[in-house]
Length: 226
Image: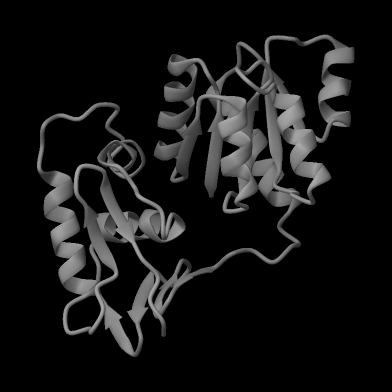
């Protein structure tokens, strides 16, 4: 699952992120409510974990705004407010579940799985498509045009993240946190090495390069015409 955590407490966000990645999920983080709304509105997430008390825009207003605009992404509300009226308000504002702090990570994961099962009747995303680059998430296969591209597991995960954020600049920090699960830059060239390998596989012998370096910022996977 592609999950967005909207949480301003750095320690809590890191704790949840680590557990989700270990469980096999992809994770993005927003620290403020307005930024969380902006990211969630793009519609690329399978689930949202939203803290109730956030800077700039509170979590319930964030979810309510999404629902008013037709965004049905399942949302789990996190809050230290655990009275019945608080939980009822959270659900009425558009939350799909409500978990009070402090919480056990195992319960959070179980609730996310329940939300995923609840929406399993809907069409689930099984492929990613950016221009003529196609990724089969179930078969774990990648093709560009008619050419099959063989990737190592880490390369597959890296490309999946880049495809989910296509036409956006992705920073080294974002890759370290979401593909390698590092919470800091250890002054390693691991990203450069993997980007170079991935670029040679998806761009070699094609007229247009999709994977580009943005000097001083990061990397971008740009869509090309099929």
